[in-house]
View (cartoon, rainbow, N blue to C red):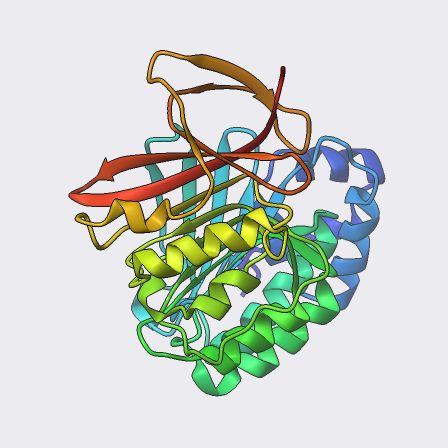
Length: 335
């Protein structure tokens, strides 16, 4: 019995040696120590509270194996919770096209969402980082979506970007998420939406991508408020596209728009879209303008329409993967 090694009292070390030990640990090890007890959590928070070298960006994912990711300058640490006990403490790594190294750790959990919430809170407090992105998968834990959103609302006032992905039409949970979590920059929705779906916002998003545009109604299109809007697989008719452009010209909708891309389904009647005042620009004519945020851009060819405040919408038709797309770029041309 006397030969059994005793646990090393790590947290009893003096401050400087303890700090040196912590500096050699990975985020996984630091997180695990922090979650071991309330005492260890307090001690480690004091160590890293003002550590300017600990710069991470926090991204979370509510998949069937919920995940918390810490993005550093050249490495991402993925902490994944799993119900598969056979892969508890399994570690792996990968390098993707962005050249970022991914260190991955799986940890067994009997209550995935509850432990994910504890992990989220611990990581956020330990590394003093805000949550910048969320991958919200409403199909993973449909009965707990509201609890997840309520928890996130308490933990983070706003996030930069969000990807919402699902297989089933679940507009109520998506609306609840977007009405309670303030997404400030980019929103991508990769799930079918109801014609009752609405995004209520006071400020425009920098980017909006809707993958199942065939679920959008014309009124929903008019209500989208973003600087850059990308609609895919839509069923809008050329008459509706014409009505959209007329609405923009009258400044009745999309006042903040810088660029929009939207499919054209009727190749035979482009003239219907341009049944409005417009000017076709020679394909070799290059013009310079600036966007609403003073970005200088160059425009070549296209067709111009004019908004009542003087803004110009330059329209192009582009073929992408056998789908004809209408692209409009908004600027104030230099004269």
